[in-house]
Length: 278
Length: 338
Image (tube, rainbow over the protein chains, first blue to last red):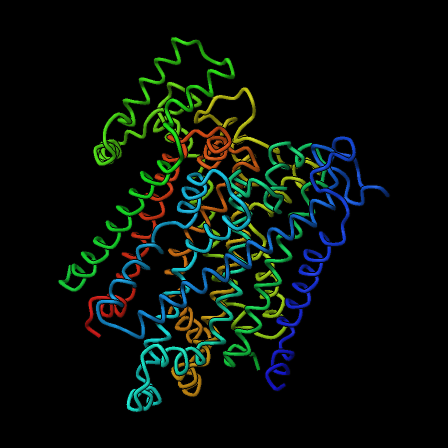
């Protein structure tokens, strides 16, 4: 209960959380309650918003609102799956390296540092080019296996500093196995930190998906916010002034990303009291 | 040059060489996972569209077989690839046959750099000043500057670019909406061209600068707040040291992590900026990549990803060197003396 109250103290966290909740509801309930097919060409090209098409139609006469609902769902799915995957890999690699030390640490951190140095976008592009059929799952996988080094590096730093704490000596003396110690004695200390890292990973996974989709390397069998923007670019909706075709995905992406960053920065204030200004 | 610095340098060189080698290998192997023989695939696709005569097709096929060494075993292809890269030979474009990838990239690169280099530098400086100022001032200034920066930095580069194009170029028609210069002008060092170039340059530049300002301000503010609470600041204040002097110390200490932050964000920035170019139809490397992906022009894609890798690695390397010179502590800890 006290934890929840602490969270409520940060206005930024609450605001971010509420916005995210609204986006989640839109992305989950929207497609479920919608009876329309997002790919159906229901009207004519670039119809302005009216009673029938609340957000108008796009370059193929498809209903933008329906596209937005399904697109938001895909983007959230990829963001969540990709983010969780990246955090899980980063957490495992980081904990293993920091906890084991020795050559395991040298090897894992060497790999991590080399991967951090190579621009992520390049690996993402090459992977997506190599995999010619891409579902939302494949997109998440591509993003998940590329984005983990940041988390791994940070988690390793935390684990190494925890390793020398006295309660770990006691665990060692009482005969705990390394794995049990990692789970029981190390992870709980990093829970808040890992949760914050997860939020950032989800946010960056959503944006990575959008970046790839805009380049034309997005999911091949479904709509995402980035795919909508890719169409907007290819069919010149920006320069022809059809704002209803590009503004909804732009706003949705920015708002989602803002919500996640606001939550992250709110939590930063909560866990690092020094950032709370007097 | 001290021996410590030399050791620091050697260590960095080894790491960057490893990263470059890995990137090069990914660049070679990943596109080869695409099923089928790329040369015959692309040539037959072109043939079906009726774009080229059968004789031209045969010539293209031979060119690609030779470029990639596709009749050779994989390891030989790999060595051939390494050799080609070493001599800056990036192959022939599929779609703009027979133009060389390296020539096309060489034409596009100046445009990309003209946006990126000033964008990153100006954004970094303004962002850090703003962040430090907000942290020092506190109160309302801080709240407004911080929330604003947070919002700016969370908008993806390309979303912001789209909004800029629509409002300032399409709706209000203040700036041109596309290209790097007016149709019909030839690139030259004449006044009308430079003026026209700048008019086209300002929007893509702005779309990059404002978002970098946001991100940098947030980082700087956080660093500066930490520094403002440290013992040395309290001590200096207790001694009655002038405010401006204290802020100077704080700024210097808080700036150091920001330099690494800059290096580490090069990759992300460039990724976002690539699409900004296609939003503005700006004739840089990003637009080249956008078109290449749409046309399955694999040599072009590989060439662009290679150039991005090299640029980012080089920029990172420079910043780390600079960092080693500015901050002796980093050098010492990296070479294991602390």
